[in-house]
Image 1: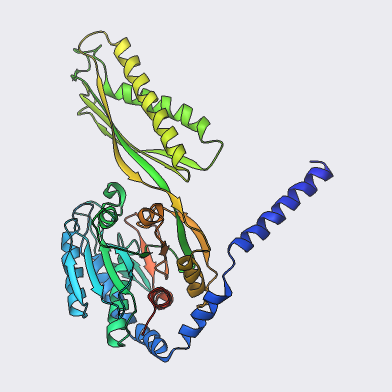
Image 2: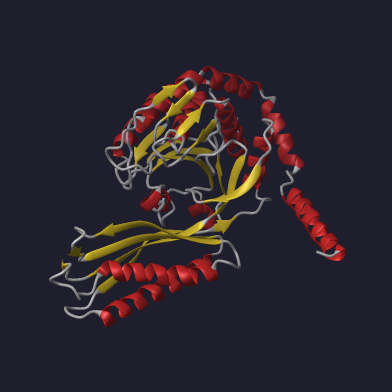
Length: 428
């Protein structure tokens, strides 16, 4: 690289860093409000209460983790969670027709409703061993961090508000939502934001991550199930039948070739064939071959473009396999969209985003904004103020059987959440 190009590159890098710092600037008026709340004696007492409740928070965390909540079967955990709402003094508690657990603290003014959410479900199938193993200071169990910790945080926040007699000005709607993971396709939150659903003016989600991470951008995704079907038969005696597995393999090859080229440029877009099923034995021509595929992008238009590439790849594979068969009927194929998570982005200047940055910084953390695929996707896509904050502590291996979490100053994330909630709702 010559000197001129090197200087140009360095100037570009420097300007990019400066721009990033400017974009993350916290308005002083929100920082002042955060500091004012921190000096409030009632809030200081609430922070002490959260620290005192820490052992109970962990106990509830373990208890809820050990109640399995597989996709579409969250009801057992939901019932226990709802009963906690009642015992801890929630003003009103109910479960909606989708299975979400809702609890309302009525505001002194009640002109707005602020939602505080953590999701009930995990990615793990029914029958998974969810017993928590404790080794030194580490908790091990599927779902221990994602998102059972969020549920236990909600309970501690509720108990603190009630025992410290803190009255928000706006209505505060606590939610244990269903269907956040996998093929749940955000069904719980989609139900909440349906026409005729409860009016929610502002949304705060708690879902994984450290307390300095703030999501204000929704990562959109489309998900599909592709199914090739044929008559099936013996690998020798019925040789020459159109083979669904061969067609599916061809479809994957077709799609990967064009998708690889398309995703090399432009806004980041990803694709992944995550599940393959079908077939009965090594010496049988399968009667069915299925794949599930996930496509994500920060740009909704690119999701549509990738969908078109997938449809063509599948249809071309169908034509090719039917062309080369030597006997029997043609294969058929269905392409079903089984997931649709909208994308979107909220301005850093939005009051809720500014309050979240200010509340996080007030506890000494260095907040940063990022993009994610969470329950907040739905309100963000609708232009409703929404953020997802972290559950704090330290953890890893989410979505695995060896998921772990350490209560490393975990109370600070709950205190941060309380500060943010009260800055958003106001308080008497």
